[in-house]
Image (cartoon, rainbow, N blue to C red; front, top):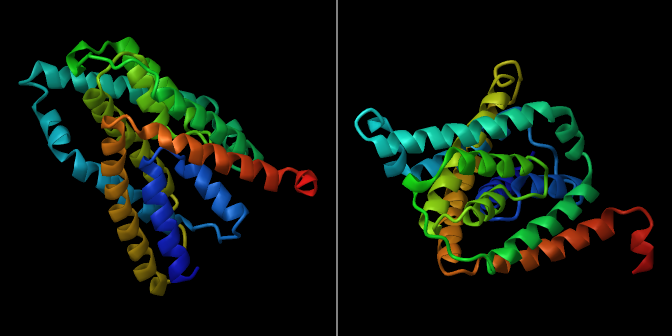
Length: 266
């Protein structure tokens, strides 16, 4: 794999992991339509690690505050909410693991899922502004948001877009929705990294490529920081639904180019 391909994958990973356009969906599209080589285990681990560090950097104060759960009841409550959402997402992922693996082989499915993501983002503009803070969240809220997040395992469904939609649908204010959504992403990204890491030491790779992979991880980290800050800015200004048009257009293009015989009609 060339340096430009590694940097491109790092850029795509960082941007689409946090912007509401589905990172897994874009990975399938880039590999299928553009013919990019499938990244190896080493590169996947480093790219996920780069995005993981970016979200930890932006929300470092919130994560550090969790260490005071024994002294602060509010932080203890927040930790339980994060664990509940993570548990629900993990259980759904394990139950439907085989079906999800098949989903990554269908580019057409990605196209249809992008249409759904676009619709969710469009509806964000019409959801009433909530006022509930973190201390007003219930376990039911966390479980439902975790369930919605599990749907984003399907390529084409945006994790950040769906969890923000779920959080606002449950009446949370934007600040709380942002905080819970992005911090809930950390166990998911960490889990994906961990699953890949178990194959890391059993996989042989060219040591000369390591510099390329580190460059890709750095690209994922920097683009991830940019994506998180852009996401927050657009959501607070109620402009996140602009991404719906991107998802719709991309979804339609993917369906047209992937459906056998459909391109002959155009």
